[in-house]
Image (cartoon, rainbow, N blue to C red; front, side, top):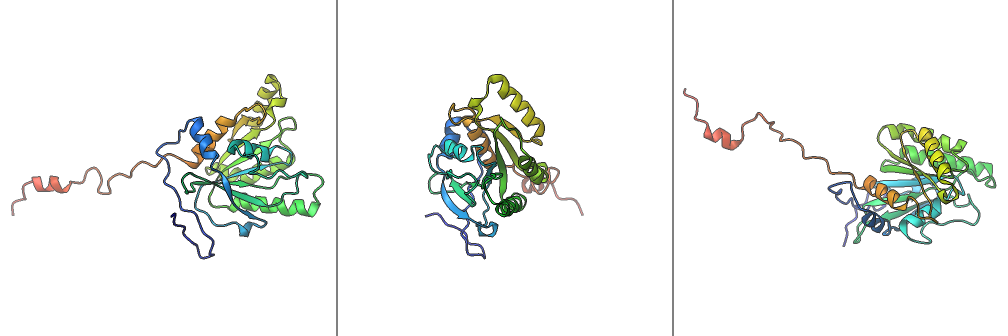
Amino acid sequence: MTNHSTPASGRAVPPSAPSAAGAQADAKTALGWMHTARFLTTAAQLHHLPPMDLPEIAFVGRSNAGKSTCINTLTQQKQLAFASKKPGRTQHINLFSLGRQNTTDAVLADLPGYGYAAVPKDDKIRWQRVMANYLVTRENLTGVVMMCDPRLGLTELDETLLEVIRPRVEQGLKFLVLLTKADKLTRSEGAKALSIARLNAGGGEVKLFSALKRIGIEDTAQLLWQWAHPPQAEAAPDALGSDSATPSDAAAEPPEAD
């Protein structure tokens, strides 16, 4: 039975799994790992999220950008991420755990879609604040995947989100822009969309993605696996230092004369 530590708040924190020896994984391994995703919890307010010490990868995007479809495609589960018939109505942060054999080694966070016109203005403002606070303050946030419809390009709200996370990206936060619905683009349109998005991604990566044509699925799964399984740090050098004598060295040297 897996042990769970419990912080002062009383909410359980899944244990951290040892990081993988390397950051490389073939597509089969990465997709198999993504397929282990299962619902963990949902939160209507930021303070309702359980504190975690595991790598967390957040999915964000404008309503109708294909975020739920992307998550369901990557995890090979048809209804893991809820796609509302009324875009913009899903206003909770949903967490999904990842990991095999009753362990959790990473978490996916599905953030509400933003920018849908039919949502009342007060709700828009409230959720923009919640999302901004999450992206700025969530301590275990490891990476952000932003969905963007390349036919529309980066909207004003997308650019605002980029500005919010830019300081954390500069500090090492991983960032990926997925240009969804890539099957609707010609080859030249796709190349142009990639070039434009790379200029605006602020150092993040950019990939074309299509659930229908299965474009970018394996590459994205491998990248997320690498984010959650960074290479192990090399062992620290001997605290005594390379110039210090070992016990055997000291024993081999004759004592100094009085």
